[in-house]
Image 1 (cartoon, helix red, strand yellow):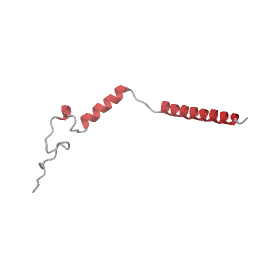
Image 2 (cartoon, helix red, strand yellow; image 1 turned 120 degrees about the vertical axis):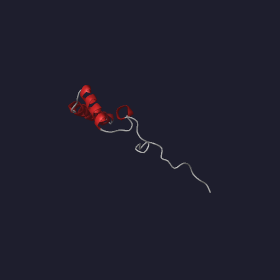
Image 3 (cartoon, rainbow, N blue to C red; image 1 turned 180 degrees about the horizontal axis):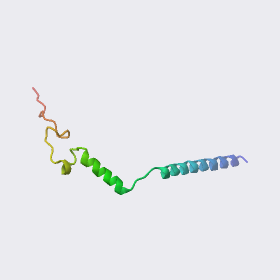
Image 4 (cartoon, rainbow, N blue to C red; image 1 turned 90 degrees about the vertical axis):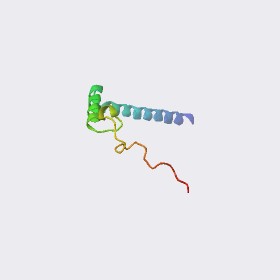
Length: 80
């Protein structure tokens, strides 16, 4: 009879894990969703209204002085 409580605890553990997984699936299913076309339109609107130096096709080439991603001037090290 020593093996029986172990089997019950294992089955209870499996049941608890299944219930937790089921709850996560329910939560995921209840999450609000939007269509891909709506998300795409929102992304396009954002890219057109928010200046981003990494989208030169929309905003044109960036002046080196305005580009935060351009290498900083100053040359190399000088050893005296």
